[in-house]
Amino acid sequence: MPKTILVTGANGQVGREFQRLAQGATEEEMHFYFTDKESLDITDKQAIASFVEKNPIDVIVNCAAYTAVDK
Image (cartoon, rainbow, N blue to C red; front, side, top):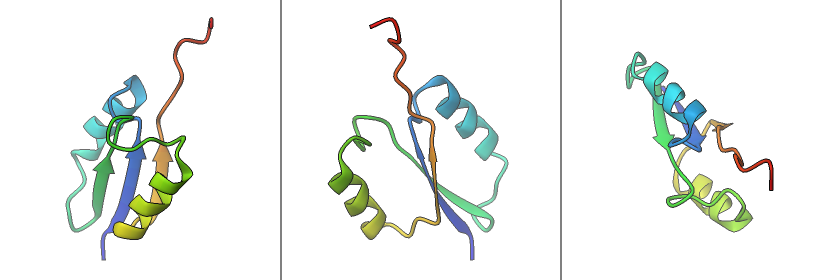
């Protein structure tokens, strides 16, 4: 059975690189859900819980970041 992986922050620098690297995995090995702040708000605990309840997630990789660090 393939591992199912949720990757948050998929449109950021680290998330895009993760997507590039994941292209080498087969569906038999891993299935990925790539989300961004528009499709899954990681600051909303209920949204995360709901997403995980609806999808068989084995691993969550958080690539989301706050980039305006000078603020």
